Length: 336
Image (cartoon, rainbow, N blue to C red; front, side, top):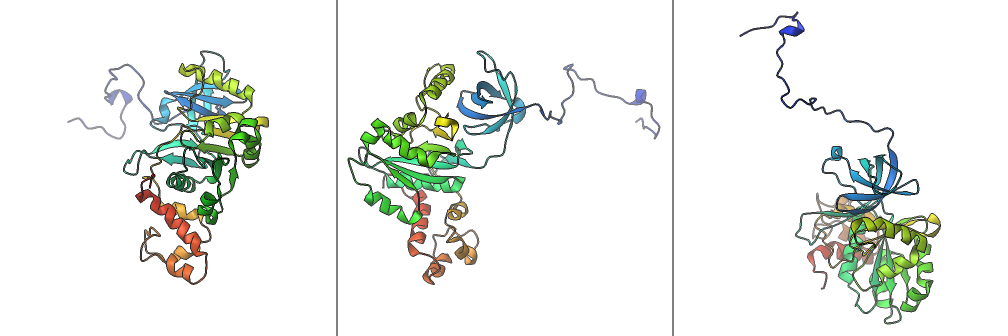
């Protein structure tokens, strides 16, 4: 065997030729310092519609991002053709850190987590008081997802002309959740939109609700007609020509003072991904009482320190009941 000494000549070093004739792979990736920041408005079959400096730009994810996916609400770095003209395509080369994430699973036994919206400030849970009947378990699950993902919940109760909201509001009174109550007439004449808009100004708000509660009607009333025309242009790429709430879509409020993200109607809201330790952070008055809890306490078991702590008068027992009702909703069916 030939051995090389300390002073070898380059000609003495044997190297294996690259049979493919291309350059060797490297782990060094470009920094894309010239990239421009944009916001993802909607995603459809690998194509992402983004807003870049008031222009709607079509983009695709760069290969270097690997399996990491961009979702509606993401702040992304984009390079390439940013003109927004027809048949142009840019590349998303970086996804900025997220401030919040709304996630769900198909059911509680499904380990596959679906990320719905990123960077939203609050979650508007739209529920009809009648026709269809309200589903408190679904509301509970949306609240848990909001608390877990770092979003502030907002209850929007519609069709108050068919039923009174008192009973439902009493159920959530101890959670201190802001709410807006509207009627069908207010939805039609625009008064509902004006009242809801007061809770949305300056924020990014994701809307959720099952079919028939008036969610899409309300969203359409909140978004200016000229912005909806832009949306129609965006969705022409999908072949549908208009948004049918089959995927999440970000829309600007009038005066560019906030964003509304319309999401598809939900029949279920799985919570397989939820960590109870994050949910309790939405109850700051109860957090000090968890210091004596056993490791990995679910806060809904016999050894939980919250029972004694609340019994000593440190917090309202109704707040502990509300917390445990939300934590237990994962073990209950939504129609119960």
